[in-house]
Image (cartoon, rainbow, N blue to C red; front, side, top):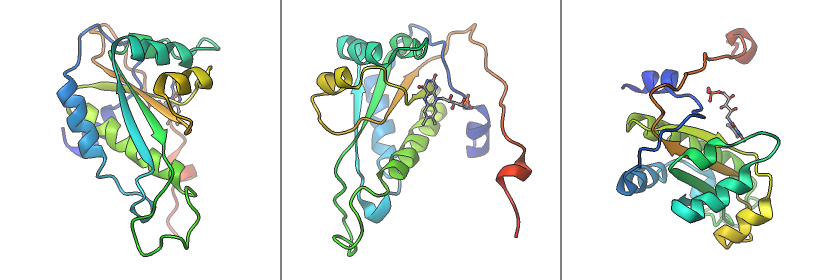
Length: 175
Ligand SMILES: Cc1cc2nc3c(=O)[nH]c(=O)nc-3n(C[C@H](O)[C@H](O)[C@H](O)COP(=O)(O)O)c2cc1C
């Protein structure tokens, strides 16, 4: 698929099949996504690819308010840890550390979603974590873990929701 088609066809999948995912593919997706831009090239992230029991531990910690059952069903869960920004440019020390980390992680995540789609995988970004301390314990970090990405193949019977978006005139202007 070309980039436009990937963007048009990506959706948040909440109905994954049991089909396992090649770990090497996840490694390649994360390696490619790591080329994403970041403020002063700080790369304030660590991508944890979780499988098996560790994935289940984290997946359970994300569930609450009736949300995020898909994290357990997905064969792979990526946890994106926010690491202290170390600027790798001449701006080091001039700009505030981690001021842009949330944007950087958002851009990284977008790269992962589209690379996953290109490789036949569906995805769902998960921001809500009911039990953040259980996530921190499972990953062995004190750093924030702001985003998770459930990855896997959709069940054949999965329904693809229609895109609901604000009218373009509300989100785009020519000036
Ligand atoms: C930062 C972020 C956090 C999100 N958190 C959750 C979540 O906790 N659970 C969930 O089911 N979907 C979550 N989503 C998915 C959004 O609900 C979804 O992207 C949005 O409704 C648009 O639908 P689409 O992705 O199918 O186009 C999140 C998306 C983003 C970008």
